[in-house]
Length: 423
Ligand code: PLP
Image 1 (cartoon, helix red, strand yellow):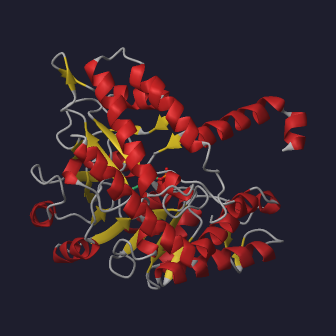
Image 2 (spheres, helix red, strand yellow):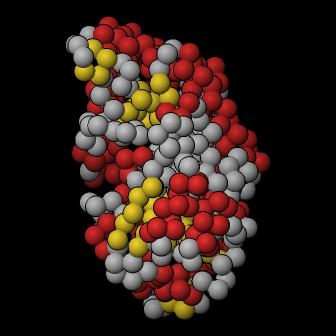
């Protein structure tokens, strides 16, 4: 950092401010994590200097022998981590991995069935504001209005009517286990392909804390930076028969030169994910989320679907009302942010407000679990969240709970390093 600080103190100072924000606060964004120093080291290496368009053994540039080695390592490790036949580690992001799959299997205007954005899905699954929603014909399924969980019979009925070319399962804000086998079976009954996007739960799937879709559904996409705890990026896993189609779709279909420094860091991440300590970490994520969900429920807050099977909790804020109006996701996110607890507003089933306001909050435990926190700390954080939300719901201008909780948050967070020994 010293050369950066000398040459560009502006950028160095911003990075240092962000480091302190991460260190002194509680990051409960469900899609984030903290990478190890080893992953950071690979990501900031000279592997970034090279163009390596193509694939190992078949590049469009000379001098790629070491890039071939590292990409082969990353591919092989991802295959053995998930038991996949083929892996592509080049997608720059989860969204690009998804688009590469659509480009591989679909034509313009083909029909996609996917979980709606307002009920847990992702933008890249066909939202109207994404290219995926413009280019393909999208039909969204949601969750059952009573249970707030996926209703596989209803999804099958919809598939029989829609006759989709592709069914997507996997979500960004769904706290329950997803039955990937059921989705594949539904897809087969209507002659569609099935894609599972495990961006959020990849770490849980790799370690047996969630059923894995690899080898079950036709194709699996993921990000590498959420529960998998690697560098920011995407990956695709598929059968040997589909390998060439998928690879061609990523490059030259979607992307140019791969980010080789990120691929090196992905290889490190996959090796880390094979260690027993990573399996233990993912188990702790689940225990931590359950502990926090129990406290939030005991505090009288409304948890969408009544609980969580994974790394995230979705809170319905419509019961926290003041003056006839309820506390919005935006207000809750801001209040908790002032108290040093970073969460994000989120739409909930039967949402009435815009995505910029929302009636819900998404809370995730991967980051605080990486920092070494356990059930006791989760219960404490759950009480703090409830205290702040109830206080601002009572009086939107109140800073009382925010001030009190902020002090306690800083005291707790600063005890847990950003790079504990175990990572
Ligand atoms: N798929 C799902 C289910 C996600 O939740 C996300 C991101 O949150 C993505 C894909 C997109 O990943 P990226 O931000 O890397 O494009």
